[in-house]
Image 1 (cartoon, chains in turn orange, cyan):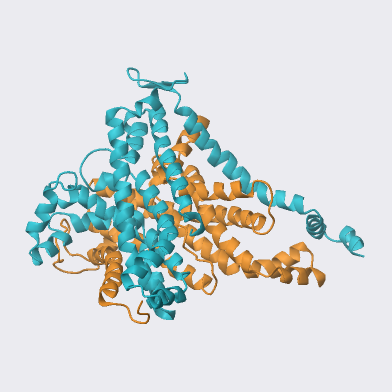
Image 2 (cartoon, chains in turn orange, cyan):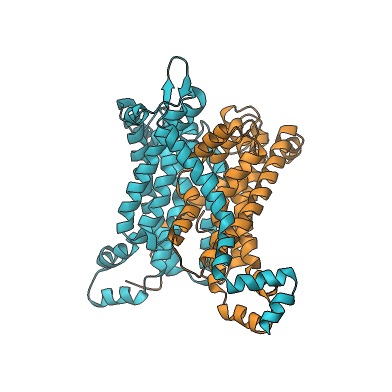
Length: 268
Length: 311
């Protein structure tokens, strides 16, 4: 095959594909500034900043944002701890059941979210746990673990074992080695994994629908708005904010894990 | 000497040394928290759910009694329920095929014709829409497809109304408007899951040595032959890996079918309705078995195509 230049057709298909992927996102950015308050008409008649102040003055929006931030922070924290422990346990030694454990970690994102959601819901019901912040966090943490796990295990595999041995030879104990050698090495992988877990949790809706009870996270608030299209401009502004909160961590995670074979976001 | 240090050091230091000398204990301590979480919370809930599939639901009193029965699983094969399964399954297959067709040129271009900064640009440009909020992407499409929305504007500008009407008139594909048609729902699904297909294909093409293509050309193969007989077979694991995502994510979705497309349940929306509005948890539990089985079957098929090595 001719090697150095792509044909026009291929170039068109590739760049066209990128346009297809980004066009709806641009539409969301555009409509957040739309002056009209009830229509989807295109092109917009005019642009304005005023809906931002309207949206951010709404108590229901603020409550949803607060809840989503709380959930995402707690779920990320749990995922960081459990994911790092699992990665540290699984990265070098092989033992009976290792495959089963790594499969179990992946299962919550490999199976459709509706299964995880309804399974948790029926378990909470049986145990008599009231749905609320706690149940939402449990659901989110379960599928966020694998994101942290993937990032940390990739980093551990790249970290040279001789560094740890050298540290031990020089008289450091296990704790010091962890603190001065392993943790600094893991730092950016943990940060990247944490950011991705945060984004994933902040945006999650399918599992949340089942575990939230009467609480409303931001995505659930958005979904409710869609079935009752009352205040379109506020919805548009919130949609744009959610979009940014979930997209920007990708840039951060990419720069933090760059240069290795690990792919920060490859397994959403 | 080290023993002396071990016994005289701080508790933390003694613990560290103990764990270093007892790797199994160390492993156990690392594994206990994640195993407890996943074993007790996750697997426990899953098994509890499957168990509930055997419970009896009384249609008259709308209550669930813990008498074991197979009625719920048998009901999956009712014509009405079977229809739902078939509708969801055909959508999942169609979405996977279309995603593969759309993703391939992008992945091929990324792997073969971009280097350095352009490659990084493409990579991020695929990754950002993949991670962008699912519900917002769906919302964006309801804006795009709405009456008087962006899609209609483009169709009018390009004078394609006739063609669109022709498409919408096809039974099983169309519908009364774009946003209430199977076509619209299909577009949304393809859009949302496309990045999940691009990245695995790109990764598998990235591993394809350029010398292989040169060899094929040297041996007299035309570009089309090289593509069909060298590139495509080697890309199959990547396509299969990507299709795991497109297939299983479409199969379990209940938000997109609710917002875009004609009425009629998908597996996901059926499960949702059964447990919510109808309150028939046993039937909902039985229904969740459908995607699990379909995905297990699908995984065993794509495993033979080498999908797991390309993940």
